Image (cartoon, rainbow, N blue to C red; front, top):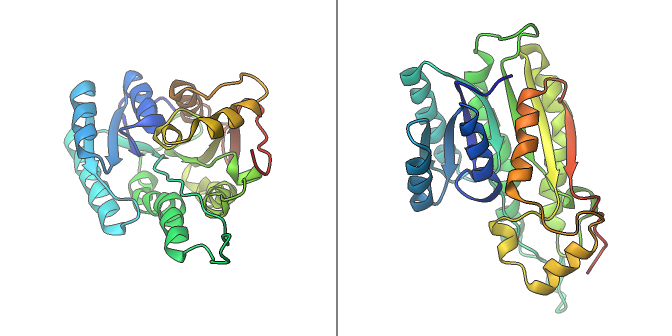
Length: 262
């Protein structure tokens, strides 16, 4: 599927991996619907990209907020005459915490819910609400493709470290739902792919302490550095254009395998 003249919804689309993805898709001729909480950054990105970009202030943990963004994007579809090509569910958070601390106090359920509501619930809800507009697309190409869904997991889905129970659970769930999602949607010609990055430059990693960051870089085999958002975006573009990528989780991690602790 070619991204040109198709609309892609990108949650977390005005910073980090989401912004790099938006820029790559836009440069390939796509229209980008940017869903994020940061209205100031959203306005700046729309000004940068121009008329083929729209911003919708969106809290992906709130189903009504997602509904408003999807409705706004569907209205844009009608205005432009372009169809929705897919979703990149890039919104995510990390909130470390041991399941039980040194004082024998269990991890607060509110902390667990915060991570799950954004990383898992927000991913599924955005996809769920957008699908009716993709399933009704006119099939394109010899295979009759209608769209692609791209989700974001993490190395933590496979080797979560101490303090990552909630985060690993959310990302492991995203990895696990990829194949059944692809199977559910196969009759519509809609693909589902998940990318599992390791340490990448993003707003989440900016708040890491130097010791933690250096420890993570040490366990990467090659290259021994954080990934660049543009490298992530290149894989997203391959997921969009390569129809044989479906129902799978792609690790993008410099051969990193995280130890239990640093």
